[in-house]
Amino acid sequence: MQNQLESAFSGRKIVVGVCSSIAVYKSAELVSAMVKLGADVSVVMTKNAARLMSPRIFQTLSRNKTHVSMWEDIPDWKPEHISLAESAELFLVAPATANTIGNFARGIAPDMLSTLYLAMRAKTLVAPAMNCDMYAHPAVAENMEILKRRGVRFVDPETGPLACGKNGAGRLAAVEKILESAAEILSEK
Ligand SMILES: Cc1cc2nc3c(=O)[nH]c(=O)nc-3n(C[C@H](O)[C@H](O)[C@H](O)COP(=O)(O)O)c2cc1C
Image: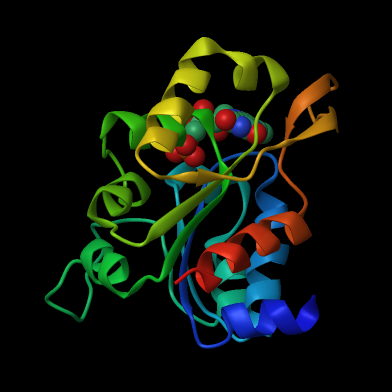
């Protein structure tokens, strides 16, 4: 499996979207694993995600700039959400919140991550994470269906004890499972 992962990830440009779920810390492990597999990883966090975990962690682990805002002074003329969208071979959003899934589904772009989704032409893989009642809500289910019809792939969350104290479906899929799904997509012709 390690060899398969290395051949899928080595030298590939992955843009990772990080949302403000309690599972945000697992995303750091995911980014670190992809970098070790030889991928060139750039991270885009929502502003709320950056309130839960420092962008500095992702910047250090990815060895690339971590993006949170579209409104910073940048040295390049091209807006970063466009240059990142053009360079990505895979757009992986993990963890994905109900809010960001809704933004993607409805084409609402109030922040860098959801703007990036609209500009993105690379294959997109979304790993949702949320409370089980949120995950079961018809609004969330409908938004995921819209995205699936559009070709967006999902790594289903796991069922088990949740950070909120409940037990149900909504835990972010295991890092290994997300890596395997991403490798599968990267290996497609
Ligand atoms: C500690 C904490 C944990 C949260 N965990 C989740 C979560 O796992 N999934 C989710 O959809 N929302 C979660 N939320 C709510 C989102 O942060 C909230 O809906 C936010 O507006 C989403 O913003 P974003 O999609 O821009 O990151 C959490 C909020 C807090 C304060």
